[in-house]
Each structure stands twice: as C-alpha cells, then as structure tokens.
Image (cartoon, rainbow, N blue to C red; front, top):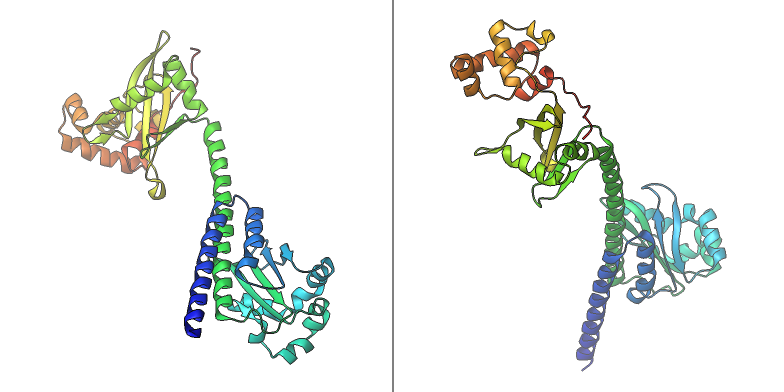
Length: 367
C-alpha cells in the first residue's frame, strides 16, 4: 500500500512538473521583451522549485559584470552587499559559470566549510542562507545570465529533480533572451537597409518570388509615374511580362518609350538574390536617351573595327544570332569577337560590357 501511494504521489508530482514546464514554455514564447521574460520567471520559478529566496540575473554581454534583473525573499541590504562584495566571493556562481551547468553549494564543500567561508560570513549570514543552487542561462554556448536559489534548510535544493529542472529552465530562458536579442539586431539591420533602399538614387524594385510581393523605392516610383501616371504598377507588370521569354526572365531588357514628345530608352536589369536571399529578385530601371550601336571612343580605340561593331550591337541588347544577321556574320564569329572584346576591355559578360558602353541620363523630363 505504501509503495502504491508513493507511486501515485510521484506520478502526480510528475504531471504537475510537466504542466508547469509546458505553461512556462508557452509564457516565455509569447514574451515580447526581456522584462516580460523576467516577470514570467519570477512568477513561475517558485512553483517549480521550492526555496526561501530566488532571483534571476542577466549579463549585459557575455563575460561582463551582471545586473540584477529581479529577486524575491531577500532584503535590499542583502542585495547591496551581494553586489558590492558577494559576487566576487561567490564560489557557487564561479563554478556554475565555469562548468556551464547547475551547481549546489554542497558540490563544492561541506556544511561546516560552507558556514566558515568568507562568502557565508560576509554575505549569506544576513539571511542565514545555508545552501545555494545556481545555474547559468545559456545561449549558443555563451552565458547570458544566471538563475539563483537559496534556503535556510541545509537539506533543500539538492535533489536530482532540482538540478534537472533548473538546467532546463536556464536553457529555455537563454533561448528566449538570445533569440530576442538576435531578432532585435536583425530588425535594426533590416530597417537600415530599407532606409538605404528607399533613399537610393538608383531606381530599384525588389520582388519576393515566393509571395509575389514587390517593394518599389522612390526613384523607381518617379520613373514609373512619368511613364504611366495613372497605373504605374500595371506598367511595371507589363514590363516584366515583356522581359520574359521561353527560357525565363531576361537579365537585360530594353525598349523604347514615349515621354511627352520625346523618345526615350527604358532599360530593365533583373538580378537574382545571393544564395541566402534566392527568393529576392532585384530589378533596376534606367531611363535614357536612345542609344546608338556605336561604342564610346575610349572603348572603340581598344578594339578592331569589326569588334567595335559587334560590341556596340551587343551593348544594345541584341543576341548573337541577331548580330550575326545584321552584320552578315556567322554566330560563331560573333562569339569570337565578343570573347576578344571582353578580354581587351577587361569585362566578363554582356552586362559588364553594356555598363561600360552606355552612359545613362537619369534626369527625367517633367511629366
């Protein structure tokens, strides 16, 4: 009968602990700030580990001196003494930070040695705290804070369950605090990048190919408004549709557009994102006076007459086959002329050649 009752009591305690951890996880997951995480800990910790006093500390940065986040069951005088002299004397804290796991005062010394230690006589004697159990709050291998429990009963806080519970809580709090700090840093970087994007003088449209959402900066809005004042978004969608071929989206697309009474050349460059942003398409718009097939003098001087002709047509966006037909050459000869041109000019692609060959006029006429 006694074993049965003990088993029932253990099962009941296990269910309470499981429910407590589940509620704790839900609460810190929903926390929006470090202060809310502190509040959750201070409300839940006494229900999970029984002790006379408890507290939670956070470090400003790994390895720096800590600042008190919150504590219960101790006086203001004790807290001031601990911060003034106790932190440097606390052997349990030192062991917990070094071992990266929960440490009990009895793991380090006997009860007699403990009560004779300078740390006990100078600090803990204020509340006659006979035992301490402290655990690091860890995130990605760094100690970001500590959880601290103490009691006057020498037999308290030493069970395997207390160790396991405190280690688990420390890891959960570390994930919440560290994840929140990384999120805030990423949000700050995102805001800075968005500000740079919005204020850039280069007309740019960012497209999320996964969701279809687009972000258009002020310079691109200006160009689109000149080309289609009533429905600039529709104009851009039509431009992207025109730039699509059977093989996919053109990296470089040009067309002539009318702006008032003047004919202009609209250039669209499509650049896929880096490997860590593969769902982002960067589209750059440039509005210029119509370009001729003639290269600037500083480039023509580097090339033969035929190379300059081929390169000029390539800079206008013509394919090898189109250049071959226009200049009465074979596609193979066009390819060889372009390879020679790339080498002499010091570029590696059509896009780079075009960038060198064309000078764009970004000054827009009034709509």
